[in-house]
Image 1 (tube, rainbow, N blue to C red):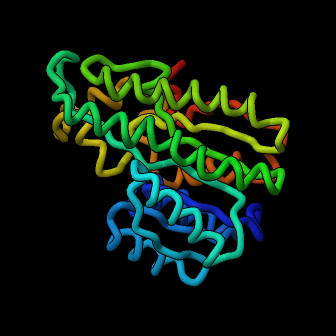
Image 2: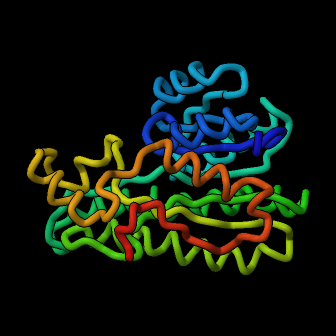
Length: 248
């Protein structure tokens, strides 16, 4: 019960890594706001997790939704200790000059602006109570970028740098800021990164991961639980790889 009595908001928690993190948090004693743009997906996950979870429909790129999402933690559970910025989008592999502007703008909104909006809303709350943890889900793409994914890679590089800068600035206020760098995982975004999901493409992708498998929602849940727990009270500003050795 490493997160007993903790209250968390997890974005993009209707599926994939976010659902894995929310599931692990509840198993370790936390109460969790399951936030997702897809209301039905959020409600399904929250229902599966029981009374310690509450679903909220929210678009992390919209300030009003972010405010409502954080307010829901106070209303449902009486506070907030942990914010997990997990929601993200990618783009199909393509030459960097070929990406449509509208798709680029969506990547900036969800992968970059959303962290800014969340920080503006949550940091004053955490400063007032002089404690809190912000966990940003970045990617190995921000450390060891693959070709033809340039604008996604760049957005995740932003997440890593923002995490480190936030950590330095917020440490005197008792706030820790950390990140996770997963390799591509068994989620619905996998096909986006690979371009197509065939045995041949999977084999080529897996050949770059020394442990020989994709990351799973459970892997991310386990790592997130540690970084957000009091066991990691001396850890801030790190971007920890959960990548099977991909970035070595």
